[in-house]
Length: 352
Image (tube, rainbow, N blue to C red; front, side, top):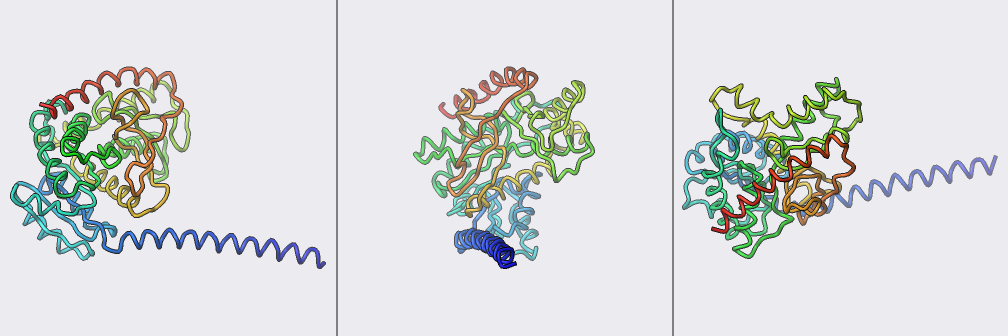
């Protein structure tokens, strides 16, 4: 009886100690995050009066990690900021309008989200947006380099495949480029992939995962349906239809809106989700992962979207793509030259 009782108490003691250590570990992580949050995080949304910027600003106002929110656009932001500022959350919100107020909007920001630029219209490709949006992004990033050079930068403005390389070149010119702190927001491709996959297979949307590689336009978007969670079997027809739908989902929205705009609400959600992941990583929370378009060595291309571990330094680890099926390899062969051309176009523009 004594031996049995001793074993029981020993096991119970070890179990309790393990529980206590887990609690202490959790408390330590919470303490680290709380310490990092002592002054709060300042977030700026550039293009905050637009179709993506307004709902993105709203979602950031609702984020408990945000204590100061700057909303900037060429016009209209004082009204947007007044509206959002009435929401009873702790983020202090202020609107800034016009180039003269950009520096103040960016001063000491921890994270800058850039949805600025013109949206896609029916018949337009992301390349059609290039001439307008490339210049807008270059100008905004130059101001970031001066006013908050250590901020994490989340670029939504299309074509992301080109605007991220443009941003990198601008930051290099100013001597403040940190490849770990520059992100192209490809989160919407993941959000769509999860939604379409869950609907197709009758799964709960919140409990699935689909990694998405490559870039953020057409055939450069490669959902890895062989690496879904939970793992399921796709027929060849399902595989092709789902892959192509994910790649063309942006066009699906543009056509459905019939000239009234592009994917703004779902993009704002995806942008806010990526921003929150960056802030969680910044706060010291462990195991924060998102697929995002970053400086990368997982392929021969200088930028590539894959799963990334986020931390206080930004993109602290770019994960390998894993094993690809023959079907996925065939798409990879198509996307590489397409993505390379977009990257080269961005670099060439920035170096002019």
